[in-house]
Length: 116
Length: 112
Image (cartoon, each protein chain N blue to C red):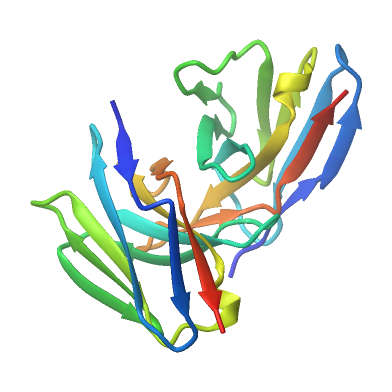
């Protein structure tokens, strides 16, 4: 199956700093990618849809100025958490959809963000 | 609003059969998917139903009834490695890039 990578796999940062997370589709092109966050023992909450060459579409309640998304190429989307606070600590996962009949989404391994 | 309901926990023994139910209420519906997630790992795709009926893939089967807004995942011949969280997800928009809305997840514990 298709492979999606994320970098870094984990990051610790101080309050007030910004953190960039990369999501890459390694062996296929993805005009669309999705960003989720997941708290321990909870579901995946869709944050935004990243669109190559255009602005991201954010879900209701997600601050677009805080979670900056850039989809600069057909294989790379980035999520930047700006002015991070401890409550932003979470597991961030990206996914890219398959272009087939099963509409399968391929998920990256996730990035564990801890804000101190 | 959008909501998907599934049991929070299920426990079963090795070799048994377990069914995880999912009911949904969403503004759009283009299919129901199931994903498995082990602790600390990424979700992996298990199955997808766009039409009513049963889909079988090895030990896993998935069922959908659109009129009842209901589906289930059936796991047969349970193995210890099946201990994980299972999420149902509704494809809420059309097209190949349709976004998924996930349920809260069911933690399955398989005991020897």
